[in-house]
Amino acid sequence: MSLQLGRTSFGNAANAGNVLTRDAAMQLFNSWVLNPKLQLHMLQVGHLMRCWAAEHEMLDDAAQWRWEMAGLLHDADWDQWPTEHCRKIIEELESRNIDPEIIRAIASHGHVYFGVEPVTRMDKMLYAFDELSGLIHAYALMRPNRYEAMDVKGVKKRLKEKTFAANVSREDIADACTRAGIVLDDLIAFIIAKQATV
Ligand SMILES: [Fe+2]
Ligand SMILES: [Fe+2]
Image (cartoon, rainbow, N blue to C red; front, side, top):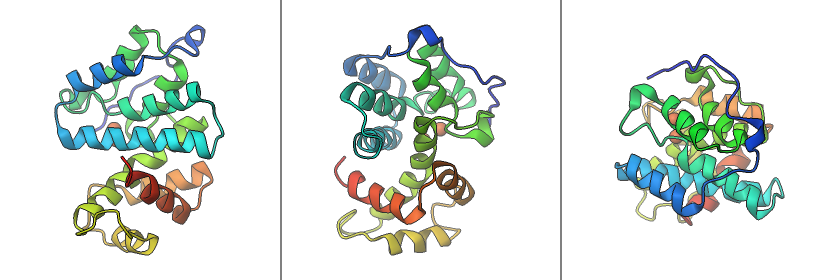
């Protein structure tokens, strides 16, 4: 599924700092996303974004929520309007005068599909977490102890098996690490450690 957004500017700079409250974000999340698997994916990515903002970007609580909100809502329209992904959620957040940083990050989470390059740290980390966290979760589901004692080596083995979680783009994962300036092993280790706690 591919929808080129045909623009590279999102939201209004005057809305910088505007966010949804957690309650309002969860209300949107729950009314738009009915598939529990997709809900879990979005919760996981939101959690990873918050943890990364806190621990690696040293951002304050308000910024951590902006990062989390981008992750939490990045696939909000995928469940009910897949052919409009991610234009619909972008337009919804624009109509609610949300911080353009958040909207831009959502618009660039699949640059090949949406035609928007990841530029900011938030953009790049959302892109980096999206596919890789999905593959690691698929791996956890086939392990009796899920994330417990999972190691980086095991994940890398699955990455090399093209038939495992075949819809996860290995190219996107490698590209995302390069863009974010992160070593793949470090990103895998971070995801294992944080995803186990969602
Ligand atoms: Fe998506
Ligand atoms: Fe996603």
